[in-house]
Length: 68
Image (cartoon, rainbow, N blue to C red):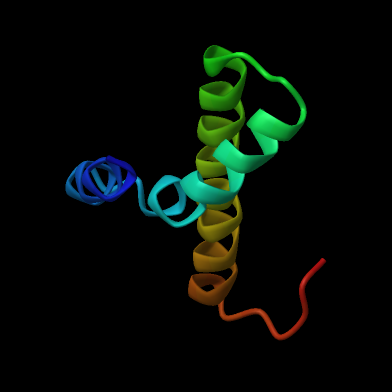
């Protein structure tokens, strides 16, 4: 079932969700998190990784030599 969900995440271009779903499901089970809390954490991770990627892309395009 998890493999099918990973494939669907990849189709939707949610690569970080696909990469981390197994780990976050385990953490959710260990910490007794609800399904919605686990999904929330998974989506937060995707958003943060995308934000970091955007910052990195903008920095590379700026051709600055040092990051502020």
